[in-house]
Image (cartoon, rainbow, N blue to C red):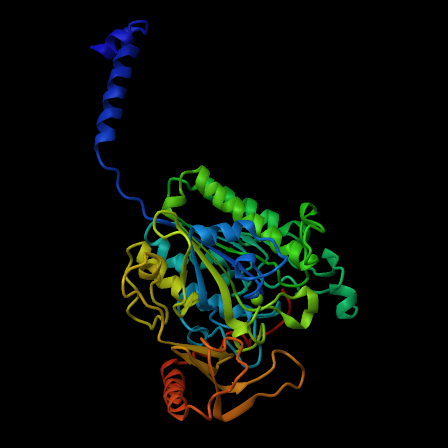
Length: 477
Ligand code: MG
């Protein structure tokens, strides 16, 4: 009646429809809406070191957005990439399996090159494939590096959408010169890398100066377009892998020089994504993860990052090659300012994503990761891995068990002529006391050495090697 009276200035027919609409609206409010599956965003930097963020101790690189997400969420301090170089690391993240299991590791070619003929095998299950079955909208934005021929692209691996450079941004180099001449003050057309949308090349060479900005715009657009559908975004930045580029707004902003400018633009990008989630009212229903594929590329001097207090960098099985900053933000679920020292890894993202989507893990294969949800929720008794294996190519070089790490083989990253050194008595470090791996304590701890030898044997026996896909190379395509 009251509604009817206030509506008297509308013609009768419209009045009835308005009343019906109001009744529907009120009754709609009384029914509990179906809980929507949470969104997942993984932001993956390239060659960012453990020491490159403000919240992980860098004294001059300013990362206010990432630092804020860490203070509102969780910082993981013993978190590992699945490998110390791009291709196997990405395969591990997307499948939850040590890269040797998927054929994405090799002792001859450490990553895929532009003349590679193969890529991730079709029968491997990516996070995107698993989430798509649960009704997620899925996008890969940025570097792919799991095969750039059509059958291996993201769109054939569970992603509805792809936008990005399909391999490393230093490939397809067309300008001769020394490293200093070409990388020192890089010009974007020195590399003829393609930019793709879905299966098509839309720009070549890619203007890398605006690549971080454009990846960000694509991600924000995908969030806004899919605000009413559960979504998964895998945003794998091409930066800060050399050659370093940043957009005009970030020129000379950092005391840390060009590398700092690049990190500060990535930090801005993370802020844009978090802001879009807040604006769309999605922050409390979205897990945002930030980490990197491997440690800093030390051979590039000030153009490479810093592993902070950790030894070594990209390409190595020392901590600096594989331990990464990792930040998890999920307002309302992750307690602000929490820190986890649990042994965790990108291999855990696959089971975490499936856990969030209420999907069962595949039973026909080994998944090496485990769900991080108990750790994120701060559940009593939530634990990380007991052991972690450090592979180089198809070989186990080191193993970790609890605080102890034993190196059975060590080798410099990429230096020509660098040969592996096998250690009959492994080098032993207690990472809780000595995260920098400076003091070999094997002689004082023979029983620990024996225990880690068993872990090493388990790693060799239990992680089966699928024939590599990385060594089939033909002509550039
Ligand atoms: Mg990398």
